[in-house]
Length: 305
Ligand code: ATP
Image 1 (cartoon, helix red, strand yellow):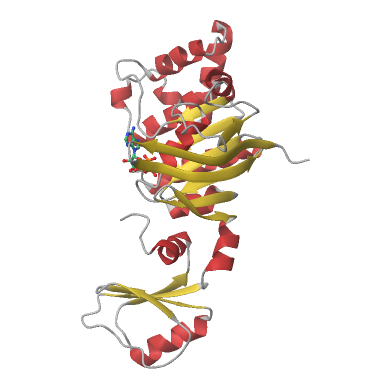
Image 2 (cartoon, protein in one colour):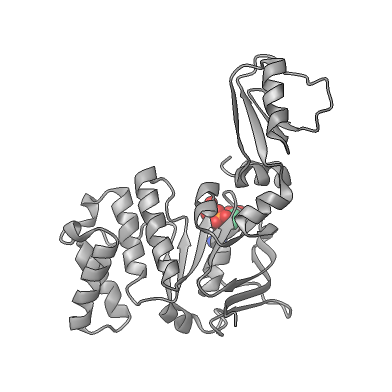
């Protein structure tokens, strides 16, 4: 039997005249890593905040959110007891040490003192921060702060972890470490909600995702399936064109481009290789298409504009 952890139906959120989220519906199954991928302003943060009652959806008869059987509009505390939240901003207490930040949080959940110190050690070990236990927050790197916030979100052994842009601005090494930890948690049965504008992060982690733009869902599915279904598998990138190239033949290619960079999409790798040989267009790179290409195809925009 499939357990549904989250069900959102026709959810809309307005800020004055702006509709930050428009008629969004989706379901998340237990142990999934469910992604919301989209550029700045797509409505990802707003949607994720509505899941734990931090923002309220517009009131309308046909709209509903159900998280573990609770409506976050009314049962915020019940959901927070079962969930861990990693907000977009690093909101640690700068005056306190690593250990003290975790201690204060654990008291919110009513953990007993003996239990707390064991749990703190476990979490610091899990996020590879044991050596920083006594350090002040201001002495941590950006990546360490992010790892500590994830450790803090895990203090109550949540069944659901909601992460808003967990690796934005971090170097690839820390990003990979965080991805490994999230995969491990997912394998242990934790359901993960991840908002991100990094297509690589979504592709690496998400078992299912929605692609969002301007508050709306554009596409939904498994990352690899979305690519297979909606976009040509190969791309030829042409950089720094001094003058635009005109392709005089009909080779079944789709072209997206700006003055300095063309993207030629094809179902056949050979077609792209032949174009390189025939036109010798300068600096080129042939690769597989990705979620960024899919976003560009469906919206005409880049994810990281
Ligand atoms: P980012 O990655 O930049 O956080 P996002 O996809 O998470 O983007 P949201 O933060 O949900 O997008 O914002 C969606 C829209 O709602 C934006 O136009 C934003 O300016 C607006 N918005 C978000 N929060 C508020 C608020 N508290 N008051 C007014 N407008 C808001």
